[in-house]
Every structure is written in structure tokens, then in C-alpha cells.
Image 1 (cartoon, one colour):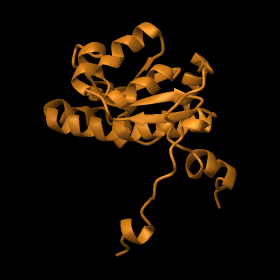
Image 2 (cartoon, one colour):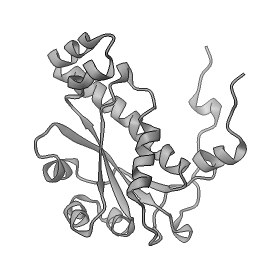
Image 3 (cartoon, helix red, strand yellow):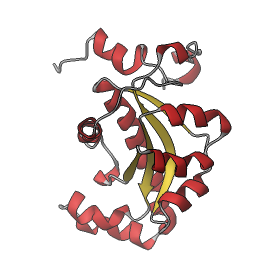
Length: 197
């Protein structure tokens, strides 16, 4: 039988973890960002497609470029966060499938021939990888605050002007300020969200 996570690990990743709305002035190191990626990259994706692309916005100059694309409610917390990750996806991920899926390099062909299929697969699997990113950040002791309140077109024009990568969502990363955490909201019970057939 495989080992399972103990209660402390489940609390760290899910049960006691919270979306952060404020940040302490504790830096996040490049080594920590690499550690997040080294964990998240092992999460499964369709045909090992790995379409997620992450841009870590850390400097005041880079933050100044990002802030005009944010909804007003996301500006202050993003200014305060040590790092804001732009979680994007590579619309031409299939070009790397001969490396990532070497036993069947021809897997790239259907995506290369069908831009809509490639977009769907890239967005779906890039979103999965974004979730892995958040869990991995928590696993190494950092806090996260995912955000969708921003103008994707503005972010893409500013940070991904060639159009290959598209932004999906933003995620602030650092050490959360516990005084800024909102009360936990309700979740659906099993019977409300699931069916057994």
C-alpha cells in the first residue's frame, strides 16, 4: 500500500491553506522559485505536453508594467507581493512534443494541423499546471494568492507580444500577512458536487 500524506501535510496544502490578500516584506528567492517549478513540472499533462509558461514579475520596474492591467482590487496586494507569477500557456507547445513524448514524436502532428485543438489542450493543461504551481508553492512553505481580475489582452501585449504565449491567471507568491486573510467561505458538500453511477 502506498503511503499517504499526514494531517499536517494536508493542512499545509489544502485544509488550512488560504488565499492571501496581503503580504509580509519577506523576500522570495530565486532558489525557491526554482524549487516550485521542480516540483510542479512532475504533475501530469496530456501526452506530457507541459504547455505552462511562467513569468516571474519581481522588480519594481516589472510590477509597474503589470499594474495597469489589474482590476483595482488587485493592485495593492500585487504591489506588496514579493513575486507575481504570470501563469501562461504556450500555444505552440506541440513543437516540443518530440522531446517530451519521444516514443511517439508524431503526437505533435494533430496539434500542428489544428490551431483550435492546440489552443484547447494548451489552455486546459496549462491550467492544470497552474494548480500544481500553487500546491508546490505551499509545499515549500510559501503562500499564494491566485487572481483572475486583470486584462489578459493588456498583459499579453506587454509581456508576450509575439503571441505565442497567452496569459491564463496571475498568482502572487510570498509570505502572507495573516491579518489580511478573509474568513473562509463555504464549500460544497460531496452530495452537492458529486454523483456516483
